[in-house]
Image (cartoon, rainbow, N blue to C red):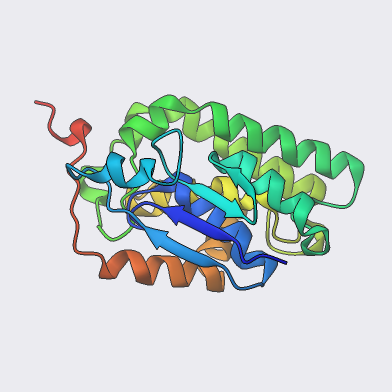
Length: 220
């Protein structure tokens, strides 16, 4: 079988890249990884050499190409069924897909006000108070998944799944900006942050030389 190739952006900033990267790591098979630094003059040109959307992430697996995070994860779940990237139980699987899609399509104010920035400590500049409703919804999702489906392990559906891939960037945001979590959700966040693949990603992010200043922090 062909070796998967994944094009990603900065590990410090690219939340969409993190998601399929975690899924690939969970599969446990070798894959090729290439990084394009974002917010540079030639970033889009470099990405367009691979991805028709001009955005990361982008997956190539043999003749198959996929250029959207959740679609990549869905493809990987089909291509590597033994990895069990979705829960086996039908009810759990449906729920996992629903919350993953909600994360994928929603939470615009959380994304804007709490942009992913893994390597910095921004608790003193936290903008969490500006998005209480969306933070509360994330907490509701996490606590509900853990209560209903989490008996088999420390993740949303017990075992690690695509749902955890989708929410992992949110976990980093909550840590960066010092968002206070309910105990069940703090335990979940700790499980994500100490997952070996997350530790590897974070270490890579901290080594990156690039700095992006988000527009939201340029506001007066």
